[in-house]
Amino acid sequence: MKKHKAFYKSFLCVVLFFGLLIFTACGKAPEKQAEEVAPVEGETDVETPAIIEAAVAELLADPFLFENKEVKIEGVVSQVCLDQGDKIRVLQNDSELSIEVRLGEFSGQFSSESEGQMIVVYGVLKTEIANIEEYKALKHDAEEHVAFETTQQAIEMMKNKGLEPKVNIFIKLSEYEIVLPM
Image 1 (cartoon, rainbow, N blue to C red):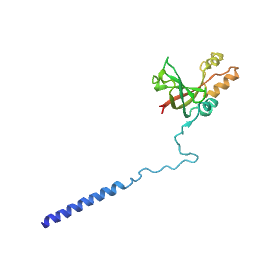
Image 2: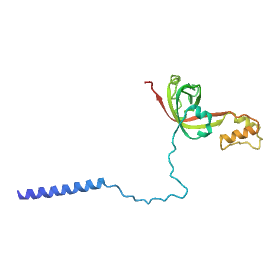
Image 3: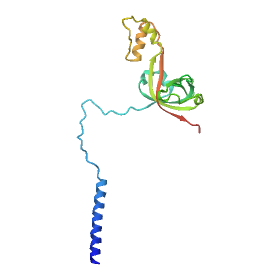
Image 4: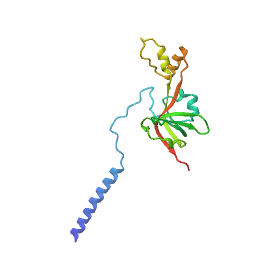
């Protein structure tokens, strides 16, 4: 009987020892292996850009303020391009203002039944000159390829030639939510 008690006590001590070892090891934070890099003078931590929530009216009033930035709008699907299925128009609530949304990878996911639905759109605001060909036609043959770094630069060049640029403002869709009526 003494042998069983001694074995039982030894077994219990071993189990407690391993249990304590596992318990303390699991609660311990891992030590850092890599050295921290000191920030270079003048650099700041890069943060993920925030999504700008805006009304369609704001985007249309000053598109260059929002150009190439992530935006979020809410509105009503007012029109679906049925020919190619690659764009929709979103009408701002309580307004007649709308903006084009280019669907990209979401092409074909909207139909005429989507019209009238409330939608939340996330994407990057973009601009382009619709009538840039008029400017290119004025250029000499030696300057075959006309490229501009920004839409604003193209507008300035066109105005200098007496042309009135037609700016398309659109959102390149990255995500959307259909808002179901309550």
